[in-house]
Image 1 (cartoon, rainbow, N blue to C red):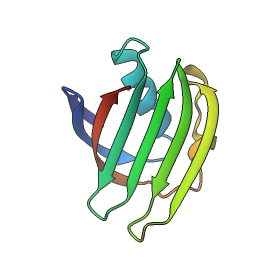
Image 2 (image 1 turned 180 degrees about the horizontal axis):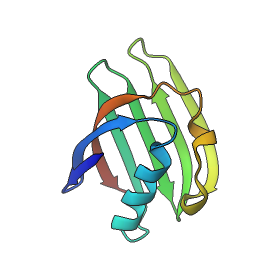
Image 3 (image 1 turned 60 degrees about the vertical axis):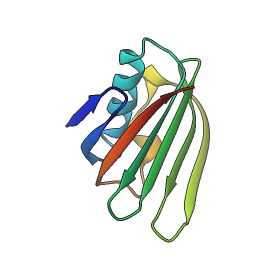
Length: 101
């Protein structure tokens, strides 16, 4: 469940299954504008998704120790599925911020 207001909010649980829906929702709310969604969990886990031209172009997930997984992509937002997010350090509550790019 996501509670987003004025570009900020809390997402109760981001998983490989819910992450695509979150990105699609933000893209829809911004009417296709470019944006970067950034999130941070209480344990320091970091999530960043950049959307440009209606496509997810970069996905970054970092753990509390500073290790990062960076995925360069060119996937239309409407075609996003959980496969891109499998194996990433998710399944947490994130405080998120959406920045128009």
